[in-house]
Every structure is written in structure tokens, then in C-alpha cells.
Amino acid sequence: MIREFYGPFEKEIEKVEKELEHVQLVDEVSDVPCEKCGRMMVYKYGRYGKFLACPGYPECKNAKPIVETIDVPCPKCGAKVQVRKTKRRRNYYICENNPASCDYISWNKPKKGEKWNPDEAEQVKKATRKSTKKKKTK
Image (cartoon, rainbow, N blue to C red; front, side, top):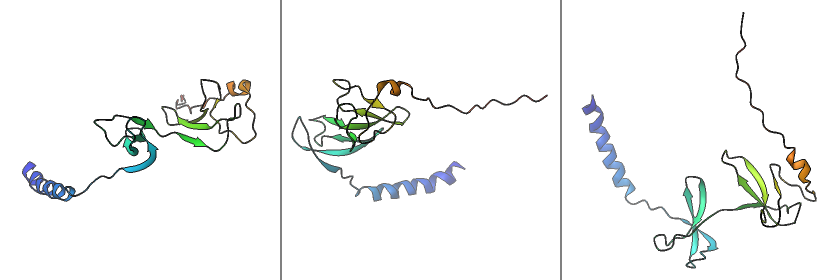
């Protein structure tokens, strides 16, 4: 049974290896210069998504996350608002000056002209889970 499988499988692997030899992975160049060496950083794909990295890798190991911002200013201080993700991939909104000078953070996307009230922010509803308990039958 193993010989039946392995013979054609080995030929298929050799064929695929020959075809893949001429394929090159080209990185997408960004418009952000590297602070350490001055080269233009490139977009790379990692375990947690896209990030910026220096193309001169072994010599320069500079890397940065891609920061997503929205066009609505911070309701408290007027700075840019960043979109970040929790470990469970849920979006939250935070001021770029947090924690240095501003303490704005919210689950809800801010609206233009909205003023932030920290007392209301503390009263956030937690997501409820559906119960999977079975009803007892008599």
C-alpha cells in the first residue's frame, strides 16, 4: 500500500520543486524610511499580519507595526485616534497620546464633535454568552 502511494507522490514532489525554483517573492516597498539605516522599509507578512521591516535584514533588524488611524480626532484632546486589536481580534479605539497625556480609550468608534465622558465609559456592557446547559427532563 505504501509503494502504491509513495511512487507517484515522489514524482509529483520532484515536479513541483522544479516549477518553484524560478518563483521569486518580491516585497512591497513602503514610503517609510528606516530610522537606523535610511533604506525604504518593506511590508512583510508575519504570524499576526502585516508589518514594516527593513530590507537589509541581517545587518539592520528594525521592524515596526502598521498603525491604523481614523479621520475622527480624539474627543478629549483632538489628536489622532488609533484602531488596535485585542488578543481576541476585537477592535478598540485609543488616542495616540495615551498614556502620556490623554486617557481616551473606547470600544465604540468616536463620532465627530462628540465629547468624551469617562464616567459613561466605565459603564460598558459586557458581551453575554449563550448558555449551553441542557434542561433536565423528568
